[in-house]
Amino acid sequence: MALSRYKLGAQLLTLGLLIGLALWEHLMRHYDLILPPTLLAIALLIAIPLQWLGHLGETLADRLLLVGGLILCAVEAPGSATPMLWLGLSVTLSFLLLTPLPALLLSLAIVPALLYLLGDAQMTLFNLALGWWLTLAAAVLTVFLDRSSPASRFTLTPWRRDRRLSGTGIRESLKIEVARATELHRPLSVLVVYIPQLDQASDQFGSHLREILSASFSDVVSNNSRQSDLLGEHRANVFWLMLPNAAEPGAIAAAKRLSDAVTAITHPEIGSLESYSRVCTLQADESAERFLQRLEAAANKLLEPHA
Image (cartoon, rainbow, N blue to C red; front, top):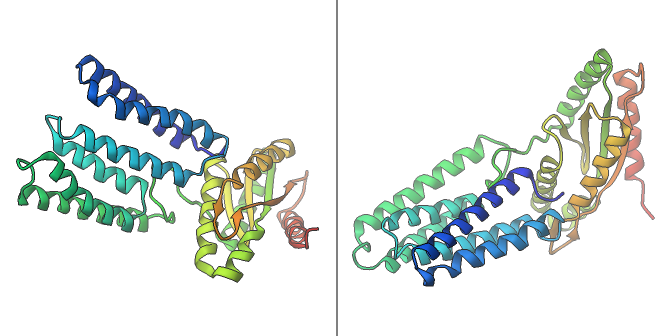
């Protein structure tokens, strides 16, 4: 499942709004304005299943949604009784679907372009200054939100951020989860995951690309796991995903789902990511130290050369 439930909910809401807008324009006999929302609705109807199946990357889907939204704003604003609301919507879309710097540059260009489309009545220095001031305010707010969270990207899914723990943090959390599982007689599994392309990215293209791919992997894990699951980078390119209250069959199913989702992460330089994983389940009366040793052994096995 390559599409989070929050992203799916946002896109379904957008789809409903587009269909409602098309019907409204039909009822108002604005037949020349029906085509843009209708085409966008059709595009979303196609994109949502493709994202769900992992055949359409989230970034590409965001770009398509942004382009379509800006076209819709440009078409609807001139005939609207409140055209400045469409200007605000176009700026908001830019910051929701792009990283801060590209969103700022695009928004600074959108403001005069949309005011020009609105005609001489709206193309005033006051409206231009107001639009640019709102753009700068949105940029400052976005940067502040980014810095207050470890996530590096602000999209339509801001509800779930990168919760990746450090090696020390994941070890301490594991000891706590082992104690809780033992006390409550609940199952506990850990998914040990190795991403070999992170080695390649770091060696050939530097640490910046590795961090981008690592953050993308964390996003995929966050979108395809439960709120209680914890992800940590045990060592370079090897991750632990703790699955509280998950027995071995559930952990194996989670590993398969995650493996399928990871392949949707692509980059022109290295292609699609792939993952190797092992499932370790806490045994009865097993100590945290012994469980850690088994996880270390599983990580070492994954790092052995693959045929």
